Every structure is written in structure tokens, then in C-alpha cells.
Length: 192
Image (cartoon, rainbow, N blue to C red; front, side, top):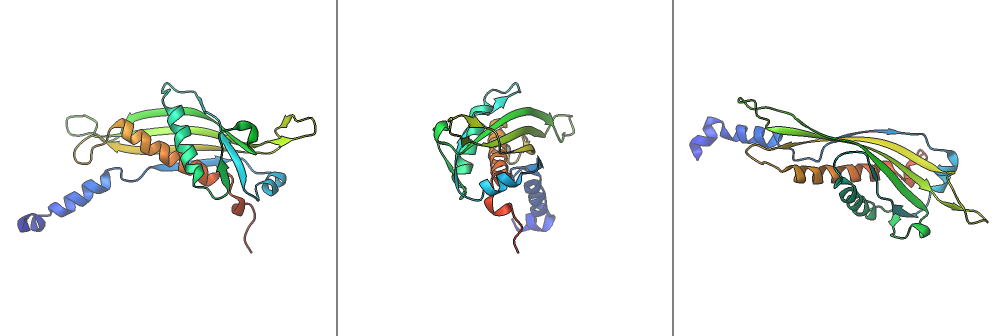
């Protein structure tokens, strides 16, 4: 074992660990500006209903898995309370899975992929529900975001990962990113 450390094998292990996707991934967010009325509205805790996302891809299993991850991620939020009855909600989260793609990343010497890149693009809309005297819903206040999320997984040795495991990790990261960009009461006004 002592000879292994002298020959540089620990550095190879560190390089291999660094190449594996131990993190969830990276994201980019484009957000629409918020109205002053909506900034005032989101200054307090609200009840949230999460609608199933519209899936525009050929991967139908993503919809249910993403909603489950979103419910868990939003349940940790201090500013929102996730509920299952849409009629009782102050806010409704809608979304579309616009794109989902898997493509090879790094190849080995025999031209076989060692890693794959997973990319997902989601647009979200969180709409405030207001009740008027006629009890009809209005769309006066909302926030919109487009999130692009990328992760990589390794199918080679060591630390290989299945596509399902990588998708699960990607959806968790995406859900956390959606939570971090939506409905942040403390982020609406600059702190003095």
C-alpha cells in the first residue's frame, strides 16, 4: 500500500472523484420582472398548490417525479405552505417541461461514451389567486421563470451511475432551484 501512495495512485483517485458527478448540476435562470403589487403580496406566508407540469418531451415519467420533488422542496420553505386542495390555495405553480435531452459527453479510446450530459428546460409561472366579490379568479399577479438545468453522469468505472439515478439527482436540483428563485418575501426589497 505504501508503494501505491508513492507512485501517484492517490492523485488518480482524486482526479477520478472530481470527474464523477458528485454535485447535482448547474443551472441558468431567466426571470420576468415583478410588479410592485406582487412584491407587496408576497411579503407574507402563503398557501401553495403545485399543478402537474405540462410535458412537451418524449419522457412522460418526468411530470410525476418533478411534482413530487417540488412538493418536497417547497415543504422546506419558510414562506410557503404546500397544500393539496387547489381551491384553498393563495398561489398556484404551473409549468412546462420544454426540453429534455441526453447526449454523450466524454468518450474513451474506443469511442464509447464514458459520461452523458442531461439537459432540461422548464418554464414556471406562479400565479396569485384573488377572490373578488363575484368569486371569480383573476390573474393580476404572477411571476415567471425559465430554468435551464444541466448535469452529467458517469457510466464507466468508478462511481458509475444509471440514467434513472442521474435524472433523479437532476430533478432534485431543478426543484431546489425553482424554490430558490420563486416567492422569496425577503428578496423583494433591498435591505438597508
